[in-house]
Image 1 (cartoon, rainbow, N blue to C red):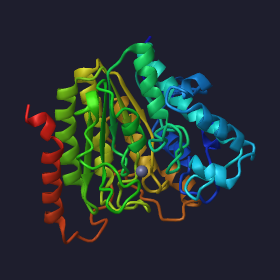
Image 2: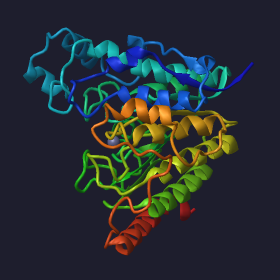
Image 3: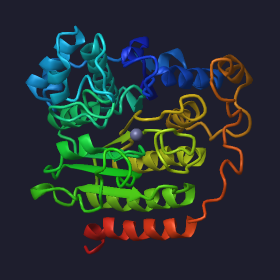
Length: 384
Ligand SMILES: [Zn+2]
């Protein structure tokens, strides 16, 4: 019998660890799963073990030389000067023992998620271990070694001949995926993010629309720093509706970085939990409308692993399982269990408390700028 949703997980996903103090911390997967377990919303049957991506699969989106360097770096055989050419051994993306295997497992997890859906075993699938959207063909960047989305989209094209809509709601621009498919008219990349004016990786301007035959299949929605829920959701909803209607995908892959929240230490957006309730709802709706349900969701950024990510990512799974959006207090056992480890007082309710932050003085200005950006970004579609 076809399952509603598959949850891709194995404890080895936590081996993707640069250091104990590095902001990218996969413990957030455990925190999320534990919250879902306390909600009695995840069964052992829902969990599917990720496979490891083969070299042949990694080669769909990465250079042989780069893979070879990552393998050597896994055993400490690459100098800092050589590593830096390939973006590894840097402050952002340091060397660590076993980095090839750990990275290939995250890619394999996204491939497992795709197989669950495309082979008809499950309607939806979630791989929170994936979402490494900054990985380039021959270079690591921004905590990302191999790019699971780029490999997975190539795999979807090669094995299933699918037209893919990639939707990236991480606070950072989904640059690695965009550049991989910049010339490809059969892959549409959609990224809503904080403007690159002051934030890594600096790209993601509305004028990046694709190249050659791929012109008009790359969409960027850079919102201003301090953007709040309503403006963010207005841009997301309007843009995703119009882009989906224009591109008409066979399958949707969503990258769900949870770093646009006010609490996130690396970005400057002022979202609350509200956007994380709403983002998956529209993704699912679009998948039902255009793709006969085929929706694969992956993780991404998210650096407040205690107060933000577990609640945010739970909404992905709850949406897939059609469990109504919870309100009120979080399960007491979850709060009790993790409060002792968390460096901050945990938020004990599903929704954020009102007045999470001081009113933003430039609110109106920001909303107007975002609206103008939206008009420019959708110009290619709207001019017909
Ligand atoms: Zn991010």
